[in-house]
Image (cartoon, rainbow, N blue to C red; front, side, top):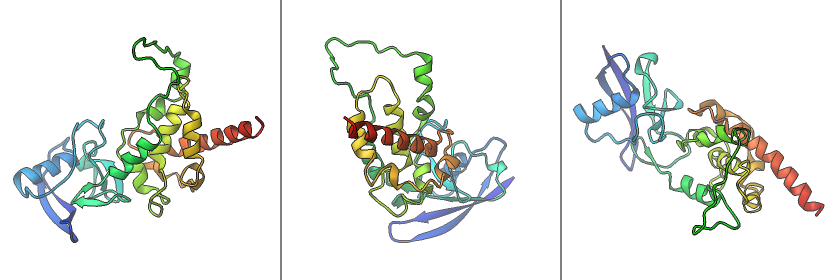
Length: 235
């Protein structure tokens, strides 16, 4: 059967809709359809993808007004197919958006284990128990697709706001018993651009393709921030 696919295009100056008729087979994803269009109908159509397995997050687009991974979304499960770039990111061309600021904010919060006395000459294995791993494991599954940021009302109005994906990353490392960088990260997430700016709309958790629950991470990070400030006050 053939399905009409409506794609929002952007040529660098103006945005417009374009329709394509694509033959669809059982098991075909939205990404498969985009690849068919590019290879057989319109080679100028631009979009981003990589793993095709729901791991890299590169193919996140807005499908029927909801952020989804194109490689995981089955076309035959959709009544209509309308594809747009995700919100709250500058559109470069067609479905490709600019993630430079997104990853710059990740670098600010230092998304790695911070150790005070690390030795690369004499590395020490840091063993964790299953219980210690479980505390942060869910939040380590974020694939940086940007879906949560794209539906965040604060991210849409404040360029300096860290956003749910970045704060989820912060929570992941601050809950890891091997990390010693809490002081550095609390200064960032406890600021005006961090957890206290969140309005708790919870849309970020609603659209997360990996069920990471960024909204929950932000609220838990708030509790950690309060405890940290209280302890600091009484020192």
